[in-house]
Length: 258
Image (spheres, rainbow, N blue to C red):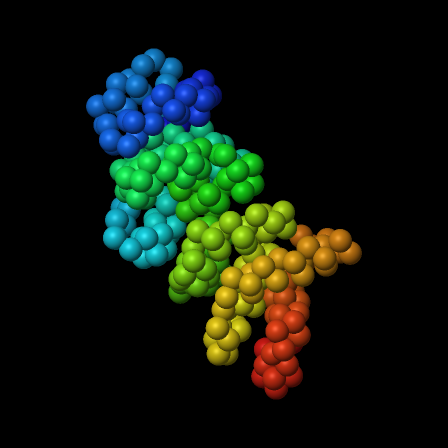
């Protein structure tokens, strides 16, 4: 099928007049949405072919988020980065071809009439970069893009599995909001270092991601991080985290990051 998105005018209308439409979201009023999008000029069809993902609707979001990152990225791996930054694409998918998933994922917020969370789930309300990892469709694709490791032929989603094993929403915002984490080589280097610590008995917390970001923000002022390989980032971050947290035994005895 062809990928559909909404027009700029439709996006502006939905964003600006949300208060007038919010009851339709609360009630999951499919007839109203069908009528609204049937109006001429609401929907735009792209030339992008894709297969509709087989979404996971598990009652536990920690399970479904992990699987749906893979499903979305597999289905839309051919999107360019420029295309994947477009709000009208992700807002369109949340209202059109992926509406069932969007309503499933927003169910608690719609039941509780949490207007702020519904807004950030559907639209870019947090700035261009941060919104990519808050909007409920966009964040699945972007986490897939940033963690997919094509060098691992057996399981290219091994870093995805690690990243989404807990605290998915918070990790996504904390980790990917930094400018340098737009580079997937850097992201994979950081994640490889943290996985190696986990595999050597370290209990991974959100702070490990925060400290890795802080370190590279400092280092980035003195060198061009984009020129480094994934392996070089892994070694730098691994050594730093060992020093910062006092994991000297791993660094010196196990020779993890040499």
